Amino acid sequence: MNKVVKFGGSSLASAKQFKKVKDIIMADKSRRYVIPSAPGKRTNKDDKVTDLLYACYDAASEGRSYKKIFDTIVSRYEQIIEGLNLNINLDYEFKTIEENFLAKKGQDYAASRGEYLNGIIMAAYLGYEFIDAADVICFDADGSFLPEKTNQELSNRLAKAPKAVIPGFYGSMPDGSVKTFSRGGSDITGSLVARAVHADLYENWTDVSGFLVADPRIVDDPEPIETITYRELRELSYMGASVLHEEAIFPVRKEGIPINIKNTNRPSDPGTMIVESTLKRPRYTITGIAGKKGFCTINIEKAMMNTEIGFGRKVLDVFEKYGISFEHMPSGIDTMSIFVQQSHFEEHEQSVIAGIHRAVEPDHIELDSDLALIAVVGRGMKSARGTAGRIFSALAHARVNVKMIDQGSSELNIIIGVRNEDFETAVKAVYDIFVTAEI
Ligand code: ASP
Image 1 (cartoon, rainbow, N blue to C red):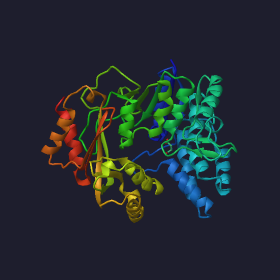
Image 2 (image 1 turned 180 degrees about the vertical axis):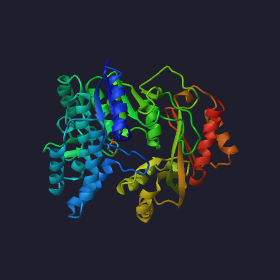
Image 3 (image 1 turned 90 degrees about the vertical axis):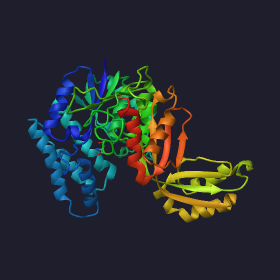
Image 4 (image 1 turned 180 degrees about the horizontal axis):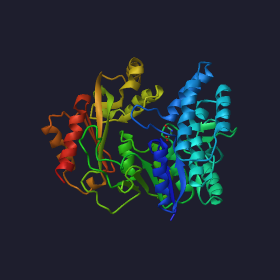
């Protein structure tokens, strides 16, 4: 057995959390590759070290006073080292970091130091080898990530390291300068390492016991999801369920390696297993519900639209020209609606309307704002008759007006458009009809 374990910021926020992490790693010999994030918040009011690093770098590189934040960062690490009774000294590292901040080495370099320093501490604490992610995670000169080169570098390097700590979140470009993934990117590093070593399991340790069927800010004490497929997860995370970085599933998915989301503070909870495919039936007809507010529609009407070949393409060209990506596009015989993110659309509102007029000469264009999209996701829906019926009768009983319905061809999800103000009521109604009623 060979497991890759990634620990998020809250799991590594203090010496106390580091101790829990060591217990977890030592409890299972197959936990051989460890990917740490930077120290996160210890309490709600605390700061994440990554945020402090960004702020400190901005101040230093703009010639403002930065010492106070810098000292706060140094003290966060010193407290961890002292609390663990470690015999290491990071003075040289901090001196180099300060010099590089003043020499304007870049925001990515600055942010990456959170993981880098935590990696050095973790390696010393565990007695594992430290491997700098800058040597094994590769980006192109234009900053785009290079998956195959990285896989090669990582597998070559890790073949020589039976146990190692590789900091998350960053890598380097051909000239050696540091480049980071987007925020939360240590999840991606963990997934890349799991792929490179053909791990049996990628454990992603965080501060919740996996995914929940619905957002706990909307539904009281929602049920956990025991097993979810990559495809289901993709639908849910696109719609806002955010336990794992959206891009983290791709490297392991290539190899069919399962991911287990686990809770550092409750290690015996089973968490959520994310798998390619499974015969395990979900507990309920649906696996999860997620959604987002802040969409609008552009409704286009033109008599005989259905006979006009190329109509859709010409309309979408206009959106492409202004860099607006569309979410859904329900259509009728003489009507077509485009769902887009309201904030993106608002920037170019009048230009897009003018562009559509020029491109297809519609009879009428109408806008509808403040809409929300809800995804009801589940592999169990394919074989269950009446799922859509149950959703819409639940929404009708909750007095929610449905603005749009879209069922993906995979029958894995049903997307519903409602008004922003109906969003929470709609999510609760769908949860109750499938989960509360099926318990
Ligand atoms: N420390 C980085 C962040 O706060 C990356 C990570 O934690 O995954 O976004």
